[in-house]
Structure formats: C-alpha cells, structure tokens
Picture 1 (cartoon, rainbow, N blue to C red):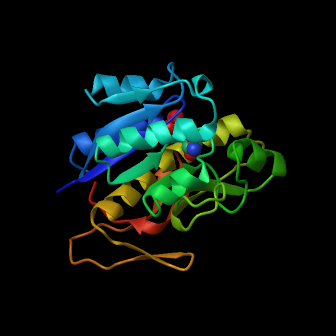
Picture 2: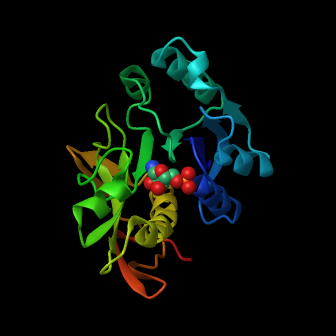
Length: 230
Ligand code: GRF
C-alpha cells in the first residue's frame, strides 16, 4: 500500500506541486490525501485543487488559540488517514501536543543547512552572514523549531557577489530533489532514527547514486545521495 501523505503549506506551494508531480509520475510511491493551509489564498491549495486532491483550509485567526487550530488540523489529518505529515512552507509553529500526537511522522524542509540559520529567514540569514555554502535540509520534526533528526541535506555554493535572490533558486532546485527522495525512503520504511542520527536501511532495489547535481552550471552536493532512477 502506498504512503498516504498530508501536506501543510502556507505559501506559493512549489514543493507541494513538485511532490504531487512526483506521485503522479510514479516517481514517488505515495498518494497525497490532503493539503491543508492556514491561508485561503495559498498557491499550495490551487495545486491541490488542480489535481483533485482534497483541501482543508481555515484562517488560523478564526480560532481562539494555536492548540484549537492544530487540533482541527489533526482531526482532518486523521480522517484522511494520512501516514505522514509533510510541512512545505508552513509558516506557523505546531503546538507540542500536535507534534507528540504524530511523533516521528512529521517531516519538514528548511532552506538552509541546519543547524545553521534556523527560523523563517534561512536564505536571508545565510546571505547576511556571508556564508559561501548554503543549501537545504529535510528533517523529522520535534518540539524545537528546525531541530529534529536530519534525513538528507543538499549543499549549494554561493558565488561572489550573489544575493539571496541569486542563489535561492538553486536552493529550491535542490529542495525539489531531496524532498521526494526523503518521502520515498519513508514509503519504503527505510529510515531508522538512532538518537539524533537517521540511518538508511540498505535495500536490494536497483538504485542510481548521484552525489553531485548541476543546477545551471553550478555543482551542488547531496548527502545521502539520491537513490531513485530518474
Ligand atoms: C521552501 O523554501 C521551504 O524550504 C521552506 O518554505 C519554502 C516553501 O516554498 N520551508 P514553496 O511554498 O514550496 O514554494
């Protein structure tokens, strides 16, 4: 049975679109059973509707507090029988009771190499700091923001004189590679958490290993490497 995924998003939804496309093309053994948002105008919802995926949308400001809002989301996720919850640009913190309820079943993508530059401005903070390499991280979600065990990361060089606007498209391009990969590993039950470290259980499936991916002319690095055949 394929993995049932609920995605929570607040914004444009390019990761939502990418995950839907991967599932549709059978590059990802999963079905997206629900897309949730706290923003009625979120582009993520349109991607879901275009693909006949059920949506749950409620403005969080209509709820008395965060816990009530998160409880309403939890009920919708349980009704949709989702196996895992994927955060894709969800711009609010989840309350501890929600995280405990779905322990080990929530994952997030962050636009920096954690633990560097956590928070809502990962790209801007990396640019302001002047790092020469940034990237993105897929990780399990725990009760501390951008803190849970790391599943996969990609490294993206920042060239001389580049601003956030110049290098973030490369970071996003890498997000579109590593998020579906992490989801496929979950679908294959290949991820094992030992303390903070996420181990990848070996498989006999044929796999194509790619360590370095060019985005435009710029080589970017993925670790652990992608394993599905594209
Ligand atoms: C991505 O950069 C992701 O890393 C961060 O939020 C952004 C969402 O972008 N958590 P999109 O809405 O998927 O285009």
